[in-house]
Image (tube, rainbow, N blue to C red; front, side, top):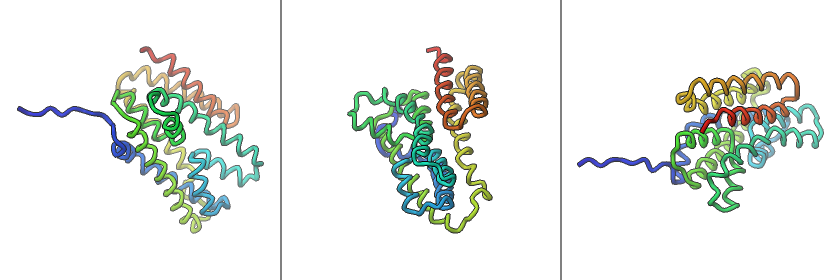
Length: 238
């Protein structure tokens, strides 16, 4: 009699590491690009690595480099980075109900290390109704965190030999990554309910395009995220 294999879901730290592997190349590519851009923004290798360890936000770190080159005040940099990273609050609020039985420290750890990439993996896992644990989430987040720091460090080393990152399109790397994440995250939903998902996607994209032409990019990110949540909530019929 043949044994029937059962899907136990994602329960261990190692499972989280495995789940993160498909996004590792993205972290390496974007982190490497940031290291090069950081060096060309007059940051040293230690400052680049420390920023990656503390700020840990690809988009906000690229923004910080641009603001530093523009001689923006410290207050302006802090406020802009705060607005750009405010979307992480929405992502953390979405993830927290799944870990309500865990300790406060564990939830803080999950929220602090949550990124766009790891949230995309998390959202896909939830959408596919697969079982997962805190240890899986920790494996996913820690792998991403270490990869990002190492990638930015290596990029900083190479950055001394590249004087014009824009020439190689490195300044566009973050935009390309977000486009890939967007398509990957919605692939599962599109297979289940094509018409509704396409309507949501088109609405969010159009809203983002309009807002970017009316307000600053940092404010547009926040407003577009809120509108996307609103549209998604109204379209969700369960």
